[in-house]
Amino acid sequence: MSYPFYPAPLVLLDLETTGAKPASDRITEIGLVHINQVDEGIASWSALVNPCQAIPPFIQELTGIDDAMVANAPTFADLADEVLAKLDDRIFVAHNARFDYTFLRNEFKRLGMTFRAKVLCTVQLSRKLYPDEFKHSLDALIARHGLEYHGERHRALTDAELIYQFLNAAVKDLGAERVQAAIDELIRPPALPPQIDERVIDDLPDTAGVYIFYGERDEALFVGSNSNLRRRVLQHFGKKAGDGQAAHLSAALRRIDWIETSGDLGSALLERRLLSQLRPRFNPSVRGKVDQTQSVWEVVLPELGASEQALQIRLLPLSDMPQAKGDLFGPFRGAREAQNVLNRIIKGQGLCRVTLGLEKPKKSAHAGACAAFAQGECHGACVGREPVSMHHARLLSALSKHKLAEWPYTGPIGITEGPEWAQVMHVIDQWVYLGEVRDQSELAEVLAAPYPDYDLDMAKLIRSEIKKAQHISILKA
Image 1 (cartoon, one colour):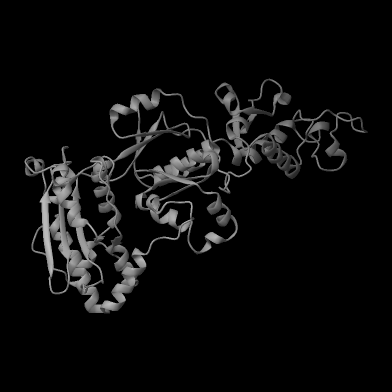
Image 2: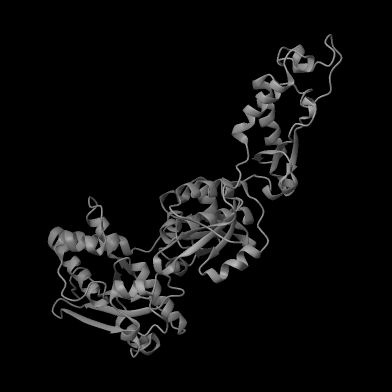
């Protein structure tokens, strides 16, 4: 059989929806174009769909579809058999195809129906055919190729017909053979370890989130995050999958799980939390580390009392931080790291271990002298050659870069992320990530729950993200 564009039947499809999350949002309109045999031409079909939920104002403004328009429209359940028949045995083509494909699969799944197809994304096709172009949105294709439409933009059938025009333009520009070769490459099944079902990869969304690889006995092997989960997971099985650690990970893999997030911030925060909880053995950043919740310590310098000699240095576990009365320095990954930092400062500054209370004076020609003084490595605070106040000042100056950052807000904060119709707020306090809320009514429960343990890497991530955040809300506990 001979078909335009590709030697197999295509269905070009676009959906309008109530939002961006296939798990919770619903379809409001379906538009599709059948690419039939050359002598049969094309066939178009569209239908409004009652989503059985309110359409957010932002979406109404974008698409022109409001609640009144879909009030008497059929539900997806009413249309499911007809839609499935129109999709059957055709390559599924859409712009940002995984979005539409995932929405449709979820709608069918709610009805106990299964839908799978080879998927062609025309965003990816445009990138492959026109690699020198920077933009590949539908609006960019309209401008680049002079595509014309007579219906309303952001309506399902209008956008599906624009995809048809793009395919025509590409064949005219580059020839059918090149377009077909690009399609072949894009719809080719991914190379996967034999123990992983291809249907699992088919289920992966092209959205931001965190993925977890599990091995035998459900041991966590690897945790990662990306703005495109499906693309990132498939990269693990690419050309380098047969080398080194990648080969060992691929061989040990038995199950893939994932969690979608509102965006890159949500992915980064969730990834850090899961790394701390699951301790996956193939993540280089956590392999071999000690448990931070037990072993991250602080160096504490109590304020000077009546005596200059009253300065003390001691290590405290993080659990004792609320009771600390002096300045806090760190945190460090365990007592060994804290001691190494202090040793470097003492040696580099010529400080006295006896004066710091870390060593008892040795018997020597100089009463009370420390061992380092005899070796010329101490400036002599222990024998009166340097004022103790100056000695302590030098120590505090050297330690200043390790001073524990104080929480700069009066209470917990919220950083909002995601599109207007699907925003979430990430709640943070005292450098600890408390979780996310989608509605103000959820906030009280999050703030009332016991705080997670302080995590050094999470605290560093939060500091970095706060610097980048465009808007931060101060929350009332």
